[in-house]
Length: 352
Image 1 (cartoon, rainbow, N blue to C red):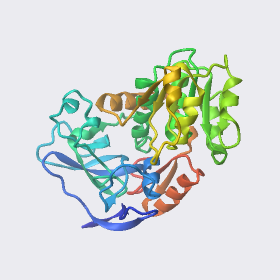
Image 2: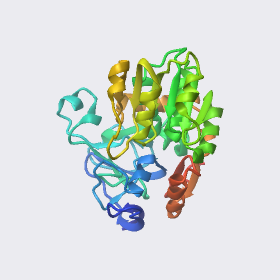
Image 3: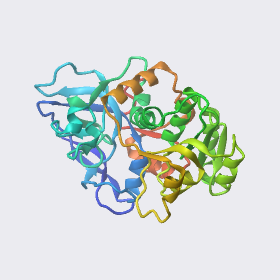
């Protein structure tokens, strides 16, 4: 039997379409998830526009942020049952034997393969998932919000696990997509003040949402001089912690300009192409530049607990829920910043 799926079929701009794909069957150690909600991520948009810098095994069903219920299980799967509400990590395939896998940092495994890029993902009705990727969704967390666990994990890894934010530190978050807005809340939760959120003039709606979520200052960097704004804030020496999520290479240049001596830049946003500016100020200022990639089991569990606790409020994101056949509307709305976050519901509303 076949099912509808959103498929990237070539490495060209907007080479994505709805196609029929086989409904998978579980291998002994995998399950079939009936997808409840699948989020459109900034990386999906990069792939859609052919602006990505990671390998894609086309044709591939897109989507790596998804939640659902277990529909069918392989013969060797234990500790789960059909009907369980679950989310799924992005590290679908890892070797299990290298130093990184053995120490729980499998996101750095040289053999790692991710859903929606190298393996078929969640923009369809049913998806096969290795059981080691699964996490149970807390009962009080709706599946439509559980689908946002992956961007919550990216935010947590950047803003909590690596940023070193403490009460009284000032923080700048470059990029006002869903991950940036979640980072605003996490920075506020850790006592950061002030919190500066940046975007472009077209991101005015997103920036205002960021203000409601805890940003003390918002800056459209294509309209205002970011360095001048920073000089007027606090002691004028620069920013303690910068979290760069924008997906623009020029944002790293901005970060280098505004970071204070001995400050920290955490870069979690991807940006293809050359960096045509000097990195010497990093040396002159004694700045720490920290790359952050993906996440692991511990971060997923902590992020799920945080979402279920209600301490992270997702309602300001105004998540737009669309049926699968309106996928293009969601992608285009993310491309031009009209929408903050979109989740596709391939099986309709399977949970109130």
